[in-house]
Amino acid sequence: MHDTGTGSTGNTAQPSRRTVLAATAGATAALAAAGPAHAAAPDDSRLRALVSRMTLEEKVGQLFVMRVYGHSATAPDQADIDANLKEIGVRTAAELLAKYRVGGIIYFAWAHNTREPHQIADLSNGIQKASLELPRGLPVLISTDQEHGIVARVGKPATLFPGAMAVGAGGSRSDARTLGRIAGAELRAMGIRQDYSPVADVNVNPANPVIGVRSFGADPRAVSRLVAAEVAGYQGSGVAATAKHFPGHGDTNVDSHTGFPTITHSRELWEQLDAPPFRAAIAAGIDSIMTAHLMVPALDDSGDPATLSRPILTGILRERLGYDGVVVTDSLGMEGVRSKYGDARVPVLALKAGVDQLLNPPDLDLAWNAVLTAVREGELTEARLDESILRVLRLKSKLGLFRSPYVDQGGVDRTVGTRAHLAAADRIAERTTTLLVNEGRLLPLSRRRYPKVLVVGADPASPSGTTGPPTGVLAGALNELGFTATALSTGTAPSAATIAKAVTAARDADAVVAATYNVTAGSGQKALVEQLVATGRPVVAVAIRNPYDVAQLPTAPACLAAYSWTDVELRSAARVIAGRVKPRGKLPVPVQRADDPEQVLYPVGYGLSY
Image 1 (spheres, helix red, strand yellow):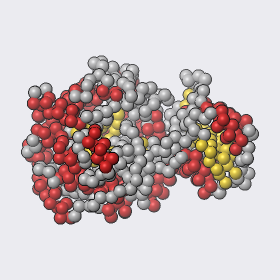
Image 2 (cartoon, one colour; image 1 turned 120 degrees about the vertical axis):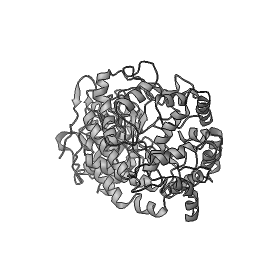
Image 3 (cartoon, one colour; image 1 turned 45 degrees about the vertical axis):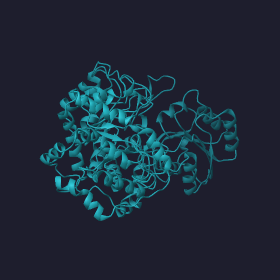
Image 4 (cartoon, rainbow, N blue to C red; image 1 turned 90 degrees about the vertical axis):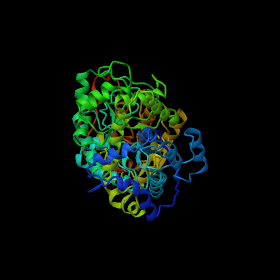
C-alpha cells in the first residue's frame, strides 16, 4: 500500500563468482541448507547460533524493512543519492546496510529500484553483496508490492496479470495458482523473495477507497479459496506470499494512508466475514501476514490500531489462529498508525504487540534508536527481539537465501516476461471480463456493421509499468482486431466543452466505446455517456476500475466490467467487444442500485455471455 511510479533502464555490474563465494562463506558455513530452496527445513539450532553471535544493534536492524532510492546498491544517480541523504542519512543501499544492518529492503518504482528486469537483478545482487561482506553479514530479504492489477511495482517487460477482483470474476483457483506460480518465478529471478500479496480483505463496502478491486470480492468463501490458491502458487515458486491486511480492511470508507479507519464489525461478524481468508492462508502455509492500520473495537477496545494491538496480533492471530510465521506491519509512514502515537513509540509498540518486521518507517534513525533504547531500558527484552529475528531467519532459510542469495542474468532471460508467461496472462484475463448489460445483443460488435469506432473516456495515470493511456490501449487493441479505432481522452471529470467535442466526434463514428472510472451521480462521466447515447450511436461502456459504474449508466446499451486499466485487462475487454472471446466473468461483488443502495441491481455471480 504505497505510491507507484516508473523509471528508465539502468544496470550495475554483477558480482563475480569469486566475490559471491567469498561473501557467502561465513553465512553458509553457519547454516547448511538442504533440499529445494522453498522446501528447506530450517535448522533452528544453527539459526539460534547465528542470533547469539549478533550484537544488539545488528538484532535491531534485522527487524526493519526499509526503502532506499536508486537503481544500484553502490552507484545510484545523484538525485537518488540526494533523496537518500535527505530521508535516511545515507547515500546508497550499501551504506544503509552498513549503518543500520536492516534485515529487509522494499522495492518501489518511484524509488527507481525497478527500471527493468536485468537492472533489478543487478540491484538485488548488489544489496546481497553489500550485506554479506559486513562482519557477521546476513542475506537480505528483498520485498515488493506486486499484487498485479492496479498495484504493481515491477512493470513491463515482466508479466503483468489481472488484479484480484478480476481473478475473483474468473473464479478459477487454477488461474489464481498459475498467477502466483508465474509471478513468483519472475520475482525470484530478479532477486525479490517476499511479495506483499495476496490481498485477503473481503471487500463488502463499495465506497472503500483503498481496497476495492485489490480484493478478490465480497464472498468470504470465494476469497478464501483464491487466497489459498495464490499463496500455493507464489510459495511453490520459492517466494514468500503475504496475506494482507489483518484483521481485515474490506469494510471501511477511510483510507489508512491518510486517516485512521474503524471497522465496526461485531466479533461474530468478523469471524464470519473477515477471518476466513486469513484462516485459509494460514492453512495453506502462508509465510507472512501484513497488519492493518485500523481499529476494530470488537477485537480490541483500547483505541489502538491493529498493528499495535497485542490482543489482535498475539491473542487472535498467534494464539487463536495458530499462526507462527512472520508478521510484517503495513508501511509505518501511513497516517493510520501515526495518528495516536509518535514515530518513536510506534515500532516499540508494534514489537510488543507481536510484530516481527517493521516496514518502511518515515524516520529510520528515530525508529531504530527507539527500539534500541527500549531494549537497553528494559521495556523490550532481548529475548523478545530474538523471537522475531528467529522467525525472519527461518524464512530466509526456507527461501534459500543462505545457500543461494544471488541471481543470474540468464535466469532473468529464461523467466521474466517470456512468451509463454504473457500468453498465460492473456488467457487468464479472457476469463475475467464481465458482461453486465447487452441490450438488443449489441455485443459482440460487428466489424462490418460498425467498422469505425471512437474510444473515449477516463485516462487515469497508468498502473506501474503498463502502456497506457487506457483509451489508447483500447483503441490499439480494437485496431488489431480489424476495426478502425481512434482515441479521444475525456478524463475522469469531463467539462461541458470536452463532452461536446466527444459528441461531435461520435457523429463521425459507427460506434463508441466509453471507458469509465468510478462514476458518481453528479459525474461528468455520466453526462458524457448519456450525451453519447443521445447521438443514436451504439455505446459500449467499459468500467475500467470498480464494476459499480454500471449502476450509474442506465442508458448505456452495453456495459462491461474490466476491473482495472492495465494492458492485459483492456486487451481482454477489446477481444470480448469484438467477439474474439466470449465474456465469462461473473461479478465477485454485488452492485447496488444507484437510487436505492439497499437494493441489489446485479448480485454476486451475475454475468452475461454470447
